[in-house]
Structures are given as structure tokens and as C-alpha cells.
Length: 279
Image (cartoon, rainbow, N blue to C red):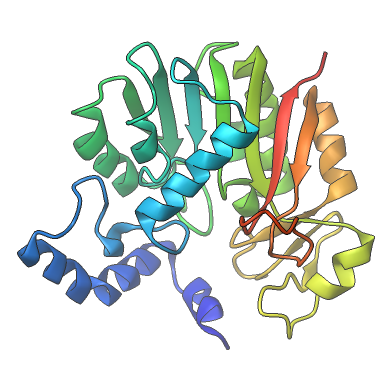
């Protein structure tokens, strides 16, 4: 059993506690040495992604500039905003006429963002939405029925980093529908996935692979049957049908490194899709 399997075997609340305890010495040293930037959370509080928080945030921001055409005066929506990894670099980019909205299922991330970002940048707003997700939060409120708390045609730019990689198909379908509703007619949505087709399915299903999806569920595959939302890969044809059903269209697709088919100039791990409203 590898470390990832052990991590998934414990409850969502325990996962947060384990991380907090693991990084306690590092966070304590940062506190007493006053060496940490105030817009960087304690390592024990970060529950998304890997690598350096600020470096990863800048990388994701660069992807938005390159593929989603984000502008300083845009209204942007960060779905699954976590603990502000993308919000932080956006504080130095969005103008006073721009606005940021973010929501997440993990309350402590929203509290950190409100205390460290909103108080200095009032055009940045964060909301805690207690939706069920067996990786982060267990509750009765379902993502498949959730209506985004925003008006129609509200946002120029919408993005989801490592969100659809933790959602079941019926939940993804609802989110795609809601993205179409709140996206402006000329807006763009950048989202990340784990995508597969017949050519790579046998490779990614191999349990001996360091990052695999061995459990087949029809049109998608999961990494861990006990925690289905831990990591999910979607069949590309199936996902395209979901996108079309939501009256969106794919404008661009950039494969990441996870399945060894990335463009040599791309350094992202997950696959990227850029979506627009269908004409």
C-alpha cells in the first residue's frame, strides 16, 4: 500500500489533521523566524496540489493569461478556489474595475482567504459552499443539484483547477450547465481533467503505474474505489458529449504530463480544456 492509498483510507477530517501535524515543525519555524509571506498559508493548512504554493499559483495564473485571455478588468469566477492559490497572484493583476468570486467546499480555506485577501482587496469575495465530496467534505448537500449563487452572464473568465478531477459525472454535468449559464457570451472557461481514450486506457489502468486509474466505471475510471472522488479520469468522447449537452464547445485542448502525451513545451500535469458557449 502506497502513501496515497493510506491517505485516502482515513476520513476527510483526519486527512486535514494529519497534514497539519506533519508540517507543524516547518510552520512553527516559519512563525518564530517571521520568514513567511502573509499571502502564503501555513503548509499544514494547504489541502490542494503539491509543490511550492506561490510558484504553483503563478504557473496557474500564467495558464489563464495564455489560454483563457484573462484581462485586468474581467469578472472572474474561481470554482473550487481552495485556499487562494490562484487568487493570490490575481490580487496583483485585476484592476479595481475587475472582480473576483470564488467558492469552495472546504471552510478553512475560505476563512483564510477572507482574512488574508478580502480585507485588503474588497473586490475579491469568497464563499463557503458545504457540498458533499468524499475527498474533502461529507454532507447531504449534493453538487449535482447545486445552482451557482451568481446571475446569468456574469463572468468573462471562469476557471477550475483540479476540480473536475474529483467529481462524479452527474456532478460534472451540472457544473458544466451552470458554467454555461453564468459565463458571458464571449467569455472563456479553463478547466483541467484527466482525459483518456482507447489508445491509452490500457496504460493508465495498470496498477504498477505510479499514477493509475485501475477501476473502470463505464465512461470513466477511478483511482480508488473506496474514495471515488479522490481522482477521476474521463473518456474523452463521453466528456465531449457532456460538454455538448451543456451547450458549451471546446475551443482548445492541451494534454498534460500525467499520461505521457503532453506537448514538449507544456509543463502542466493535468489535461487542459478551454470552453466557450456554443453559438
